[in-house]
Length: 135
Image 1: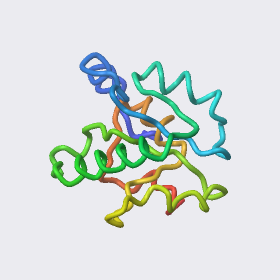
Image 2: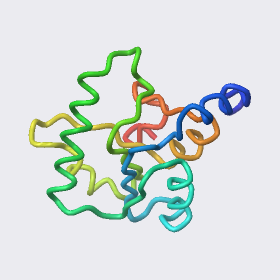
Image 3: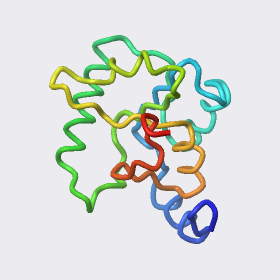
Image 4: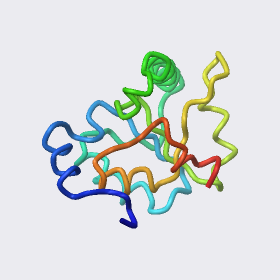
């Protein structure tokens, strides 16, 4: 109850698809637990963990993420986004880089999105439960 998940549902989701398959997870420098601890968790879930990205690649992922957000309705709120940014208040000065030229900020999350997401085998992008700007 505390973590709002049911093991049978999590196992069913895990058998259908790896949680972070096709997702680049950008981890900012001061996130705790640190990158070297999060990287194996991201990789086992099918994602790619990065500490930095070249500007053209970041812009490409930001645009793709914005497109995915615009095209998904509430029924697709759990579909993986191409870019998942995991950050913390201490790295707030980095947040503007996650605003694409059109000015729409993509969701940025605190580290619990990974930890709880793995437990639940689900990330609800439409929820602000793990929004770093609110935590």
